Length: 207
Image (tube, rainbow, N blue to C red; front, side, top):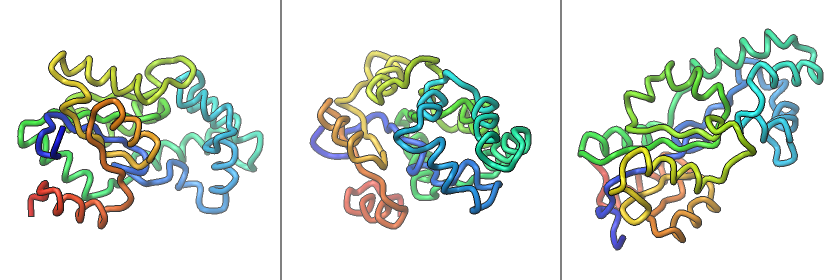
């Protein structure tokens, strides 16, 4: 597409795009570095399995309890509370809602764990705000590629939707470049201030 105004669907990433909250924040900062190493680092096998739906949040809590001085029940309880109470990046949230109000389709597409579908989506009514939601853990396989997730979203919306008429908002440059190579438009989200500046310069701002 030549200009941002040509898109008929907006595809939005969740982690560090729509929401930047830390899932285990209720455990406090004391454990953040260690949990990141154990679960969210690129070398974490259990992290990849969790995001692929091959292990559950309860399994991850049990795994963490073997490395931290906290019970599995307390870890899982804190995880659930954190996901229930998380906040969203306002500029992205407002943009998604305004685009749907303008008649465009919206898809929330994320590499995420079962806690996303089980707790985050219902707690925050995301299924009422987006036309389709696709999460990697729904597949129950080795972590699928983001392209597979995007393709699934397009299939859910109908044959008339695809890369050529879609705009991606995503924080990861690799995914932004891939989406563009597949024929779509994409913007790399960094923070709300920068995103609002981009909306203004693109003529997409409502203000």
